[in-house]
Image (cartoon, rainbow, N blue to C red; front, top):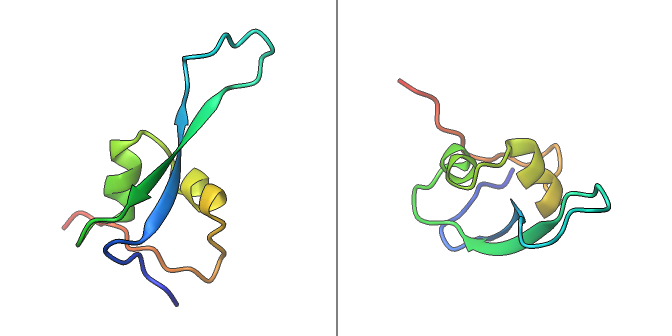
Length: 73
């Protein structure tokens, strides 16, 4: 199993309002992101208003991948 590591690069899909959305297809911009020390998957998705499923999909993370997730105490 792999964990997110400090310095690991992820791609984050961001919604884009910079194009005329006349064709009905949502435009997106992709950003390269470096994981910070002790950062959790939940903090990343909250910061960029995305979902765990989307982050996994964009980065090709398979079912066997362990991603740290913050659970409230």
